[in-house]
Length: 248
Image (cartoon, rainbow, N blue to C red; front, side, top):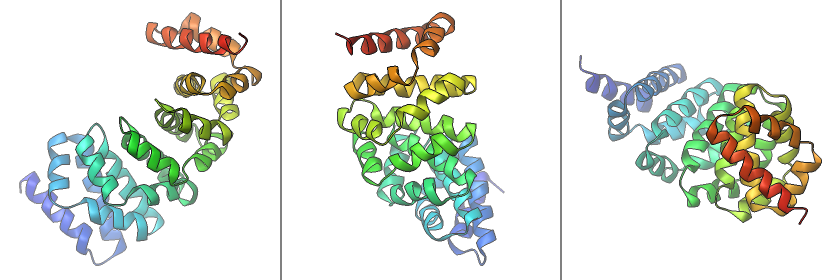
């Protein structure tokens, strides 16, 4: 059996499976295929998988939602056309809802998928904010697993990029303190992602600069300046200049 035929059968199972478990299994297998090959990802979308995946995201069991969100995230990764298709099919609101109501795996998957959807799209970033994503993201920064915190920091960084308005909303929702906490005491990857998010906030929000300093970020930023890669050093240097501007 060809891979194209397998994809067609899996999408049919996703749409018409007799049980919730059958649909969840189809979503699982489609997600794996999408993650493995860009060609298969395109074939999955062409076969009509997006709408039933979004429906499963809205109406499925907890386990089915987790498989659906992972599949949608894989379809959206590095593919602007798929991001547009998924967003236009109505995925943003149920993805944001999962940040609060989903299983731990679903929350991580939702943050990851929203990160893909927000990348290089001012419209979708604004829509994600308008859908109420920021507060549950801040909660995940405080209470989530290390993996969740990394994905949340990535998403907040992307949402803040090129937007004073969105950055102000993020700062006003209380994101600075948990981001600084992550910067100071998280695993290495989490520290870097927190630094990127704080960099974006320091670029756009004067209030955010003051909070970053007051929460004690400077020693950790100086450590990154001394130990990080050249790209990290350049980013931290710009951030420290932004923070210094607070006192001028």
